[in-house]
Length: 351
Image (tube, rainbow, N blue to C red):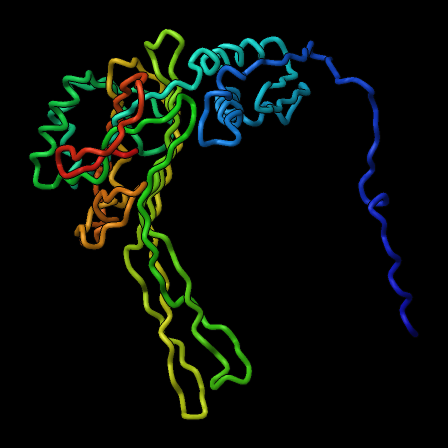
């Protein structure tokens, strides 16, 4: 007996949609406020959506989940205004943050960034007396505050060690609150699997895939109104292929049994997402722990970074090292440098 054809289901029969109120609920005392952010957004260059930075910083401050649970609230932004509907307590948390953006008028600030690695983490033995530990949420990550003078001495002492490598560094200039990224990655291709292709010889062909190996750092700083402190959102990642495990797959062909070698990558990855606040007259030092090391190769194989060569990517002869990141906030800058100038250790300032 023939089965009846399935009945077509309309969207109205799946999800019930209703309009239960004509005004926004305010059971928790929510209020609507509009913040004028044009003093900041009108000064941002090279970003068609400068208001997104303000929204991102608010989400870091309040937490994303706050906007998707009770009490009801919402936030939206245009290039002119930030619209927020929430409780007065949340507005009191948002207002000082927005004030920092508006007061800065997107001023250009400078940050000296230096990424280096040390194979042996015993450098801490002599350094701890001059470092002040700060709390970190990411497992295995440590951070300290150091005076600018002691940071210069520490970096000088570390650079004399045989296991020290300087990977990237220089002066970064960006508008306050706006993110900037520097990275070095290189593709590595490998034979991942087989793809069925009827009518072509054995019926299979090798399927090649690609992994991008290297590191990426994303930073966004925000100055305080009085200029005494700075907030920094730091996101970092390192991806390194330690080795490929070869697997030979036998295939029956018209010429007999042949085999194709497949490669299974052994990948080491590391991720960091932290927010720091510290006095502007000190240096932030972040240790990522003993991780896959973004070591420099020969300059002949170096990849450009923002148009500048900063050494290579991952050195396959060095698999682990203590990755250190020195961050020195230099405050407002009159104008970005017209042309890069070579610094010590053969590093080039990052534009």
